[in-house]
Length: 474
Image (cartoon, rainbow, N blue to C red):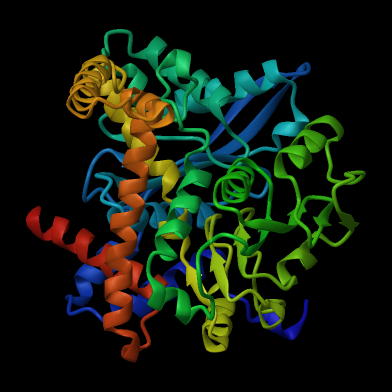
């Protein structure tokens, strides 16, 4: 390990360092600051499952960071390097993230030390159901207390297993489907959840580029169109962010990093083609739409306008921060920039749109799904056709008065009532816009104090959590 890496703060330390930097700027009692910073509790479970003729023991965690609002919310990740410190740091980020975007949850997170690729689907189901049952019987999965969601290594399939396990234990709970979000549509999921985090990254960038002074601070100008973008990680988040930015906003994806290598193409990479190649082959190697580079980490250092780290935490660290060329970084992953690297990048003048904002699309749409499950009706069911009838009447009146036909394309678009997907995207867009506007206001008002966008986000979040605790009598 190099001398620089030896001084690298851990992921949990990075979260605390960034929290403390903002907390010192607030007029809050030290006791309140400490109460907000620390995790309330962490449950460690060790359980056995009989697999392949022997009992295998697995270790899992569920951390509750803050219960200033309930239920608490946070994903469950499957990875062989999951540990208590990581889970507690992620739970803390969930608290701040939910507060920032006004989603009424406390923060939580879960993890299971497992490599999903090591197990067959039926084995993984048995492991997941046992893990879920261990958490359920302690109310660490409950619609009113603790609501998980997908994270790295998990998805709709695992959430469906967890929801079914909860229902089998709590057979009389009418709100059982609300015990977890990120489910398939046919078991209570919501349209737009799979794309939500990547869509949130797109909306975050769109809103950033509506603020000319903020764009100028990143040494950029104009709009998103034509901006050269590098994406590290083409999982669910990175794929959707890159797809939407390139297909809808005119960005040029010049580099994509993945496990096993990277693809570089200054003329632009077709993200859908690359994704289909990865599905077919299992790697980026052999893709004809760009140049293959063996060192996937090198993609972070490419010359570009916007860098989107969308993989693991700590991707940008003391060892490579000086070589980062992008003037604007959007943290699509949780904690992709360490505290040490953050300081280096800020000194260089790099603008960072922080994870607790840029990554908030997932929890926002999870909130919509939870509300849908509690209300027992899909969004748009009551009003969609009424909207269409109203619009048809209005257009008919305009055509009659003007004696001219309404433009066909505009007519078709206007007359279409909002379905669940459109309403979800609208709600997410509104959430990302309002949250960024709050951050930008604090950033620009307090730049002279050394406040950047990340510090602004922490300032807003901490104040909101402190206000909630004060209301509760603390």
